[in-house]
Image 1 (cartoon, rainbow, N blue to C red):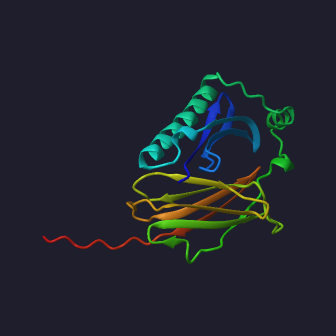
Image 2: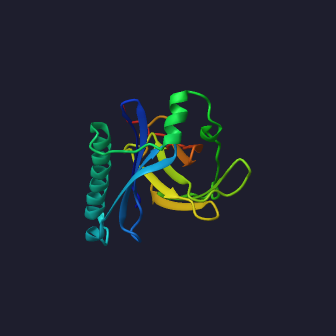
Image 3: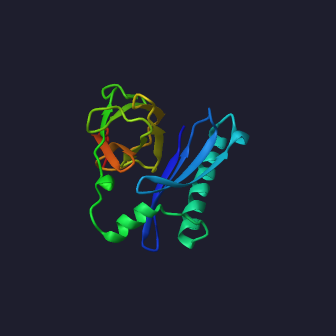
Length: 209
């Protein structure tokens, strides 16, 4: 199972985006990346070979380790312990306060290829394609999925390949909210896109009074 965290962190007048992902058991890496306006400013990677093969206990240990790495980077940014160099062109455009065509957010189109069959029992399998405004496949787009209204807040992350395609699977969490929904988000540079699928909850059996 893949885990991930995403946070917007403000340090002074600057806001950074911090993303931490489990790269899967094939790579066995926990990867934390710090972005500013879509540019990578810092990357921190640690392996978890010592936790393989994963079982319920080591999965929990991996989840805790990933969360700790994410929190450490976030705290280092807030306290200034992690020095981040912002590119001069980004600093200039921010200081001028003028519109910058290059930084204008674009729109990504997401398609869940298996929209009718993505859920089998309690197992979710997401096959997603990401395209830009010219209908071209986008390679290297970051994707994350979550279930709003779930009893436990979890995020699952992936990245598109050369054909703009990404696939990841996970066990569906227990639904607890009134209007649960599957939310899939993607971003590549300044371009963003998302899908939202409303989920049906099973009606509760009335209790005897």
